[in-house]
Image (cartoon, rainbow, N blue to C red):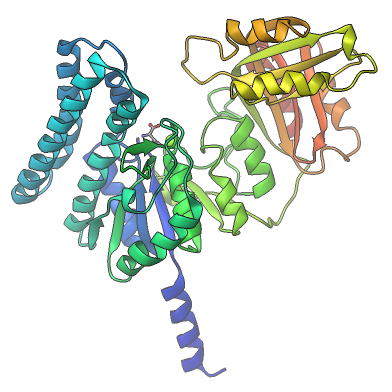
Length: 464
Ligand code: ASP
Ligand code: MG
């Protein structure tokens, strides 16, 4: 190949590179944060689709606004607070752009007040979703202008044109075939000479109602868009410099991981600190798109690459911790040599849309763990569920437990893993152990009070 040919090849490679960049709430929290994101986009021209979350704090306000019986004075206060967050950003833009954006923000806020008022009288999950979706609508409009202010051709795009979902408000399911088709038809042509800025988290059902994909869903939106566009990379920009060997708030020994396989990262996303929305890796794995996780505050520090094949496959990669787990033990002599008992238990759980994380069984009892959404005041296992299970068997429910997951490679085959892990934990009461189902994961439950010391001790022993 002569040098001219080589040039053509590398240029066409460059032309084909397409990164979907997702910025989380803290990355678009204020003007300075947005400006840092804008330079990330400017510095790498493969960044052609930007997916944003709502500015930090806004979705939480909207959650409150979408609840029942919010007094009118509180509604007004919340709307004022949201306005303050957004206009604090727009004031840094040129006065014409500021005026234009503020006008759009105010007309959206008027619409929002209407929904809030309606919601206070007659609460529906449909209106709750309409309310929740405003945060991303503000941040995407503003960020497109911030891009323009640094000389990047940024353009706002309403993702609802292509992110079609069913009508399961609050956790809508995306119509993947439609997304694929509409991405090709509507979105891809726009990426040729513009950087498109769109919303994570939100969609639209067949009746034109706004839907949302669940809290933290922007990562997942970005991954779905990357898949539909056949992007070469997905970059998740957040406020941590990648995925760590464990939560750095627990031990200062924690360090950032350079690269990690899809399999390991999927276990971490499910069992670990909630850096990525757990569903994010599904589309990326389906079409083998490498995922980068880094901090928009310190992009120069690099981050973590998540991909199919990594150079090293250590036995121990990280330790994840998830608090507020509920352990349900169901016990029945009827289980002895009988069939169909578990099927009945699971059909009750399925009816209540409860997702089981860990399971262990003995001859006459089964222990199951459930994750309680962060910040929720009510246990995911309601009295109704317990009553229905009690029709079948004896039921014990325990709270205040933490799930510790040791993530790595070949954990189900490597010699001495169990010994190494549990020898370290002498003196700590381990409630339940799951080992063997996955090569990438060994996990167990401990009391909430033992969670931090457990992680600290294990980290010292496995990563010293
Ligand atoms: N803004 C939404 C939330 O706070 C979605 C996201 O940030 O991923 O849950
Ligand atoms: Mg997030």
